Length: 226
Ligand code: HEM
Image (cartoon, rainbow, N blue to C red):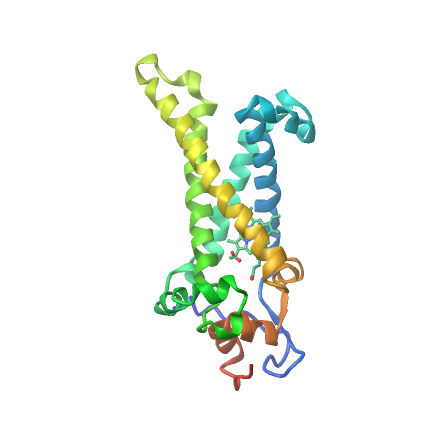
């Protein structure tokens, strides 16, 4: 079930042409802090990872500047995903409706949303991405501390350094995979989603088509139309 946190409506939402508030200002600002910090981490992290990609530091003020800021921006990213958790945890739990929705994944991939079973505020793919970024953000921070303060580790615990490097790379690659899919879905596939994370609003029709149960929840279950 969704958290049941009904977002305020801009107006009588059931009527056609009306707008629903999908993301509050705090949710949007936090989302873009997470985005900007993640992109900075991506560019600088790739630059540290491979000599072939070191040229990417030209976007972050050069090598020493990137090395100084990378861990601090990492903390900002982790703080933003933790705040995301505080904002969205109730809406991100898997529900029986998500499991039914998963069986129609092929329709989702083909962009045939009208043939998908109804879902709440977020669908299962969105929820999985959220948990990936939350878990990834925490584990990147923990392994990052191991790299940041590597010199503080006694030599007898040196294997922890290797573990930290390994885990940092693994979680970075896992989140990069999710990030690429998320950006593609949010910009090229689900039309109307991108405006919602900028302006906060969606049309009642968009909500009914993509998130029927959430639409019913925030409108009080107005008559359904396709
Ligand atoms: C350029 C980068 C990004 C773009 C274009 C983008 C786009 C979007 C869009 C359009 C939505 C609204 C989707 C909807 O309601 O249907 C959204 C939601 C969301 N974004 Fe992003 N995003 C970006 C980066 C990130 C990053 C780095 C994170 C890391 C935590 C993130 C986490 C989320 C989450 C958890 C949601 C809510 C669930 C979902 O739609 O997946 N986004 N984003």
